[in-house]
Image (cartoon, rainbow over all chains, first blue to last red):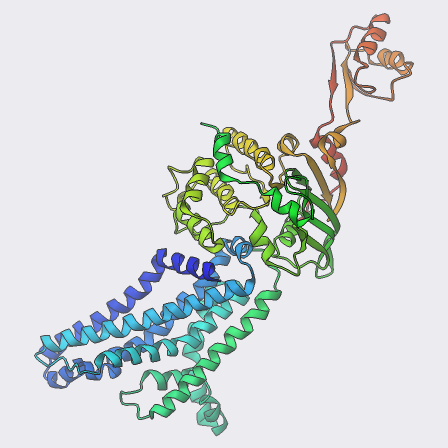
Length: 267
Length: 340
């Protein structure tokens, strides 16, 4: 599998989309903090806005924005890992070089996980740097502490884990539908629809409220807003991390028997 | 355009592979006619429709097997089963003496293939595409990639994005990719598709040399004259079944005839004259042209008999059986169908 994984990483590095997705995160975060910096200078309530620029408050500001766009970008990347192979008809030649189908699929899952980790690290780091620069421009202290670097790593880990289930769903859907577009559509739609529908149903019955507490969106929301205005405990965060990991494992586990048994007559 | 490569280039690309196959068959190294690929009763049904039915054939190291069949005959499905992409409903595929079903890695270890049209990553250059495949396979270094690019005349064009390649360039890159791991079995599906005549000739030159180096080559092509030129044996399938298999010489033996053109109006007289000759098996007449099934050396006797009756033929020629004629005769009532 090592060769397959190296090939996946090689191809991902060479593909413009890989870097464009990261660039989107960087651009949006920079634009956000530039806008906030300008706003605090011109608005009458600039005092409160300056507080929002500090690194200490990024969970409620820049990272909240990253939590909205990150899953979409993760879904796009994950779906294209297998969906594009069908579109380009490269899956059959690749399969003929893989010692087993499981090895190929594992290489793709690992590549997805690696990319989400990179996306999360870059997204959080850019947010922190943008917030730091903005704070300094606004005349506020940067707000860094001895634990800031550790916080960066921990927050990055939370975001990576938070992106995993929807990305895994997108890759799984692209695999079974043989369509990149279907993977992206289902992944994005699920992330949008699930919380909305269950929240509405929760108004009708407590049963749906209970179901809601097992969903991807509910636990992702808790995990990605820890440390902000969210008042969940660290223990609850670990529970959410576990639930999200289980959802991810479910999609991963389902993919192997489906892929192993299928006749690949195209793609 | 230069020929694809000198023999020395091909030599440096390919240490003997037949030894591995021979060893797998319990035969001494150097026995280069070992069976490397074998299908036995290979069958595939999709939703109750049988597209490959009891197909059994072998490919030996050092030979080229032409694999022919009309559209929808089951060629692509057969290749898919050999590559492990499609699971047989029944039957087995054996590679280097081992059952593919028990060891799927056999394909990666022993087979290089172009499956229908070459497919590569459009955002990568030609060279990077080969690098990506080399990483998958492992054990393929940059030297080999460069050698293969020179072999297919792509060394100076391989740094362009694949999406800008012409069809001929794609075919060349596909052949290079097929040979990356120096496989014992090479499967080529329409390898000259899209190439100009010079390119087609170059590929035709490469195929027998691959066999000479010990590769077993399975060549699927609709260009029957091309298959006839480069193949040692031919397997013809129709509706998923093997209908004829054998060496090209054996298949084409016995299908020749003597074609005689007689002056206008003389055909009936010529027919009566030639019909009395004991060595004539059959005569078909079409206007002023007679097709006579007779021994290959009967032209002189036919000419003498006609002249004796005052009939002076405008032309007498031995027409040898061609693979194309044989193929059409065997498959001419095949209804057009989508390829499976």
